[in-house]
Amino acid sequence: MPIGRRASGRHWWNDKGVGMITVGIDAHKDSYTLVAIDEVGKRIAALTVPARKAGHIRILEWLDEFGMVKVAVEDCRHLTRALEASLLLAGHQVLRVHTRLMAGMRRSSREPGKSDPIDAEAVARVALREDNLPTAHLAGPDRDLKLFSDHRKRLVEHRTGLQAKLRWFLHELVPDLEVPSRGIRRATVFDQITDAIAGIDGAVAEIARDLLADIITLTQRIAAIERQLTAIVRAEYPTLLAVPGMGVLGAAAIVGETAGVSRFRSRDAFARFNGTAPIPVWSGNNVKVRLSRGGNRRINTSLHMAAVTQQRLGGEGAVYFAKQVGAGKTRVEALRLLRRRISDRVFTALRQDEAARATSDHRTRITLNTTLKSILATAA
Image (cartoon, rainbow, N blue to C red; front, side):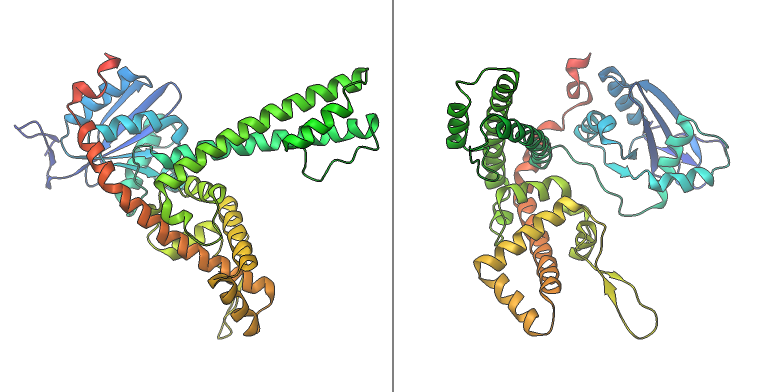
């Protein structure tokens, strides 16, 4: 029986009856290619549009012809973020397919070669086959924290390079000047250096003054970003910030890198993601594990700093650390166990904070989920 549409114009059917349509999207900088498949994985339609707002409207109109659909995009968020927002505002569920899942699907395809439609169909087939794929959501404070945290990291790295260059010039200009370690970021040290090189002429002194001016500007910008991070974390993630040993910068890094804790099915999965879950290395009856060198290193670093802070300041973390050492663990092993314990605590705190935001986010989605024409009216 050929594939067609019901009289209602809302559902596609085949010889097995009505089924859910899965649409895969292959995204590029200049175009989007969409392929729709039925419930048995057979291609039934394809579409290519420009990667512009007008293309977004055409995609929404095209998807509306199928009725209820499941949309899957290759996980290239720098290319698909605007399109994902349009689809979410229109009420579609958007799944993200990791690129590593597509290679095997392309190899098993009956159509040889590589093209945009082949890739889009591979995305759709992976979404049809796999369960528990990550779900896209509208950008919120977690993305702001990620962007601000990354930007601050770049500025700090740039400032560190300038500080190292300035120290060499100061050693040449005023060798008797004692600059504290990590001190070229305080106002008093800035004034001290300014006075020391004020009356010196020459190229070295001029470059040193330029470097100092750049360092001062970067320090002011870094402080402003830290104030923004503090405001967001305190307002949106108070439970996470209340975890003993957790600071604003560590919390911001964790939230930004986690990108939604709901995508992890358990605290164990979150621990594997951040590298605090050990790796089994045994065979037979002698069970052994070793330290995981993988995982997200920024989250792992934030958890480590929280563990060190807990150990230094006392409290439940220090008690747990001392208990593990008393049980025969080395200090390094005890710190690893404490880091895993904090990972579980962070997972619970993130879930609580995201649940607390769910009500207000739901009201926002109800307001934004309007008719097709009003979603992208400015693009007309």
